[in-house]
Length: 295
Image (cartoon, rainbow, N blue to C red; front, side):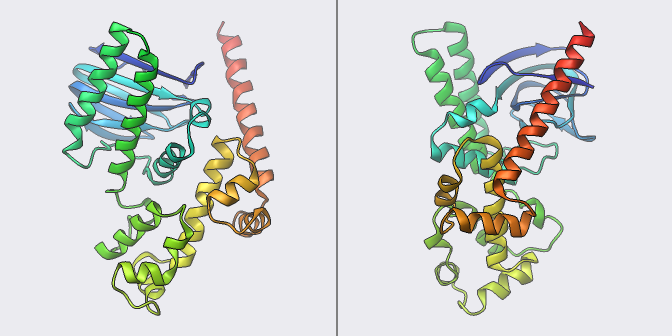
């Protein structure tokens, strides 16, 4: 299977194609694809979805995907790497973490809020103009627009049912509580049971049982599991020190983070980060070996 690489922090590309841009492939970067015009089929991990104008897709590293073009399609691609993620400010990285942990990894348009479709189209068209005109500071302008697009994606993912709850009959109130937790995960004071109970007009003594009835996990369990997922993202996509991760995600200190991570993941955060780097190094060596054989 073909693998694509990205050799810069981010890039954008516009393509108008009458046939599939490439067969099934994987890549080592993140990619957003916006359909300006045309129809066809998107395939990701053997799942298929009919695409049409104003559809936006998010493709994750190592996912197998392809597009089967039915009518002439105008694609706009935004690709960004781990290096780009690591260079962004904290608040923006937090939006990315929300996307990574709540994207269902299935085919389909991310724009659940229909009023965002014309907004995204106008932003994409603005990037295309910047790329064509290349006026002073055009790269800075493009980067700001890309960050805005990712923020819009994060907003739309809040309208999706979390993948862990898709098979459950979850009440609207329970889903609102889940979204509330995601929104305030960096503010431990807002995640106290009494605060959440007051926010949703539920008895503090009953709120954890209510949440477990509708989601399968107690309130505290869900918060811990979600927080640890974000720790994994930070370990994989950032160079933050353990004490910095512990502080940002509301752990008492680094030792508290180590204990919780080891309890639920079976290894220390440091070992997890080393494991991820080893796997990434092996994948890079395999890609380079494959490239040398092909040449």
